[in-house]
Length: 541
Image 1 (cartoon, rainbow, N blue to C red):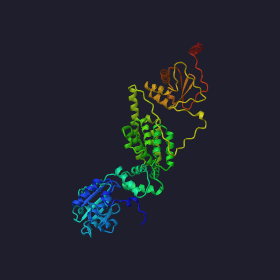
Image 2 (spheres, rainbow, N blue to C red):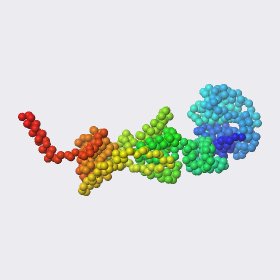
Image 3 (cartoon, rainbow, N blue to C red):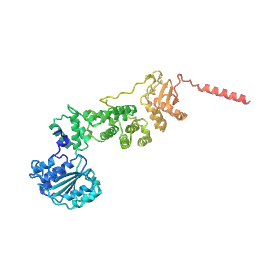
């Protein structure tokens, strides 16, 4: 006999071996022991939860010649005949491929015959919701008044598609998704008996990917063991399932929280190069932000988050630097992107657009909830803190950083880290004052507190230089260059740093002059104005 897959090799043969469905197996065993056997059963539940397996065990148990506490003995000729398919009185029908009315008419013509060598003739109809309307109508009468020697077992994953007239004639059992602890114990037994070496973290990942399906879990374990000669670890399971590493998601999430859009793009590029797709990345990001919410909401995240201790510590530190509102906004954006990937041809573009919305520094300006919170804080006279930098772990396979600029001297500093060019001398104001560069964040907050959010937002996205006693503001729109805005900046500098500085706004596309033109003193300006008026009078005369 050739190789047999694990999910077939370890298919339960008794009720006690069925995992996670004790509320169903106990009821069926009691019915068998008491002899109160119904004429029709309906098994509902998601895939891989044991519906068909329970139907087969039940078929053996009700016909077993030597039952043991409601379980089949698996030794008598009836149990062995049902197991190997040699007894024709237990028929399994796949309604997905045999959904016509002729199939049901054939069953109706056979039910009148007594079983040969068995007590009950049993029909197991899998995926019964796929039957046509005519087939359901043909089944209805037989299901309502079947012969005493016939039992129908209907199995489905979509019970809402079954007519109410069929539902009312069946004993319904709802199969639950298998929880983690029973599945973990079962996987450990299978791995130990088959000589498969696997770590606990790898088993946890297999359970997570299986999503409550024991069949899926055994299939994944089978696939992982086939491609790994040594001990199966978590990284190998992620490679098989196509899911990104935890360190990669922590690094990508940290780049999003730190508004490092360029690093986000590099992470996405590297992830696609490693073979991950947009849907799996979106699923992992949704889980990442869910874990952040758990860290901020729960006192014991280790019981609710499946990460290593070091990764959980990093996640907890990242959760301290992000608000609950931002996590909920990210979940909303990623959920919409996940829905859009079903219909989009370029799923990577959908992913990147969602991450731009979450990681670009300008994203907060389009977030209505964040704007409302900012306005409420300003109305109460509170100072809005700058977003904290969260720790970002290293990816096991590091992402290549962007090439450095050819001329580092010409690189422009960002507002978050004010840097003065080496060629530009920064003169510290004299007297009992602070450095403007060191207090720039407080200066911007002071302008926002004074009721000018447009100007403060422009200063956050722009850059500045200091030459002598002049403050140059670069990269601003021409509409910002007004006397009122200059006066507001000058006032904020005076308020925070206790120094007077001249404000020069340099619009987009312009550069700082090499030598700032000296401004004439007030007497010189008055003398120049008097000379100009004198010339005008002479011309009129």
